[in-house]
Image 1 (cartoon, rainbow, N blue to C red):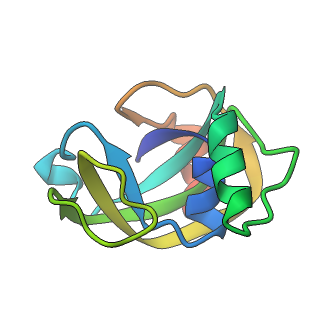
Image 2 (image 1 turned 180 degrees about the vertical axis):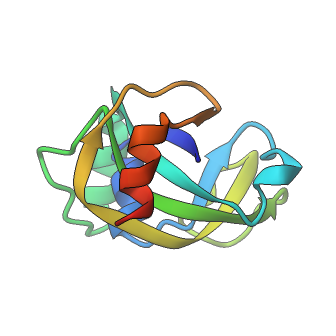
Length: 128
């Protein structure tokens, strides 16, 4: 299983606030379209993102989990042109569905890009 690391609060927004576009600088690899991947909440916190979400009425928790695999999602496609959606920032959007939070986040170090989850952790994610 592969994973994508996303800074908080954006990982939280994917799992709990209906964010179905992950903004990236490039398209996902072709093999990733239609694939379920793990969502890793990175160690970094985008404090301006917390403010942005709260100003729009989202109840972002103060204690966002970081350095954990927090759920899974499926990459369904690519958005390459601006669209009228609060989550679009571009330049490329990865469209997501089948978003599923884990009952308990799994501590794990992340990496840049799409990376392979250790087999023993992938089994825990698959058995959610």
